[in-house]
Length: 396
Image (tube, rainbow, N blue to C red; front, side, top):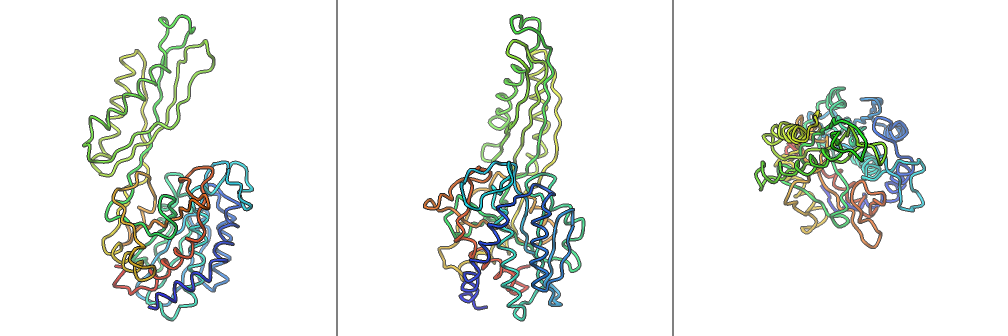
């Protein structure tokens, strides 16, 4: 494999991948609504002469570069945006009020499309078939990966190795971030409803204040992490919404809270629901209220396969030099439904650095000013292409 040539070709595609990214960025679509983005991807792949399936799991698209090989490599991009009002001021900013590509999925789609173009030019050098998987609804559990898998996205032909890539504004532009083993957390959601007894604000002794009870629950829940979980094991409990009350002089009788529980081991994931329920109900009972607790399973642990990590590191060094790889020390407590693919095939999830203070591409995921340094996009294209061009034995 001519690594320098791959990098040169990816760089020559910079204008193309930037144009695609900006086009997608201007028209963000929420989970399972990615019809415009799906049509763009499908049309682009068809124009390259690939076999294309559309409408998978509602809006998903799969393109197949079929060379008749025994092995197939899958490359995935997620397509959905977020319910965020953009504040970047970019000339190609979102034209859809209240929606924004605030997590880099526009860049993921653009990089994968450009990768398809590059690989079509190198069809005769491929040793594996390549599937380009454009997935809906990564941002919203239960997500789009599991429905794509159930709909056969990894079959006909069967995908043996699977790779995904995500922009990361905590890493300098062009750096490749990789984590051995557990890379991202389990994520489960919890809804807590506190039921008290309403009354006049001036006569609290005649009521059971659901807001006061909810406040106590919010505080005491944090003792689960500090007193019930091994301190060397990352765990997070966050309540992201608290809703209750109607007027300043009315004691609230009902508060609804929604939160998330993050863990990095199966044993802790199993324990957390019971611990949260025990605290919520116990605190509520002690204050004369009741608490209803409901837990909803989210994305499972994302664990990179050792052979795939070795291959990514080796290829990154050959493509971009020995200083190109950043080994991530700790798991990210965010979650990703790419984890489902790694339960079906060998592979890994890659971080692509996009941070550049000069270009103000420094804001974290889901921030209204999130942006990517577009100089990183050819790096992602080159790495995706090299993974597909690699020897089959190197990806298993």
